[in-house]
Image (cartoon, rainbow, N blue to C red; front, side, top):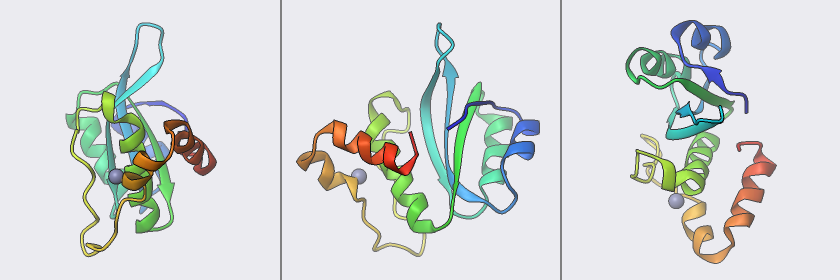
Length: 129
Ligand SMILES: [Zn+2]
């Protein structure tokens, strides 16, 4: 995933209209590396969500993925949560999307039964880290 400076111009230029997906917000450390401290999703309009963050969040940078289905959006947000939870300011586990109450996190169980490295390998396979 590429890291972009968070401002409204970049969001309009980079995030497709009508996309759904997930995003990370954060700042740069002293060595210029992006450190995400907030994750989120939109299953309706990713661009509008990020435009709001560009105006209000005060973060320096963002990353995003656009995805094809609500299921993928939820899985990706959950995966990021499990991978990054120690550095996030949003500490609460993602809720199932509205109208999709039955969806369950695939990684809550995995976290207990597999190594963190395997979780990361799954994330790399999905291209979301
Ligand atoms: Zn979970």
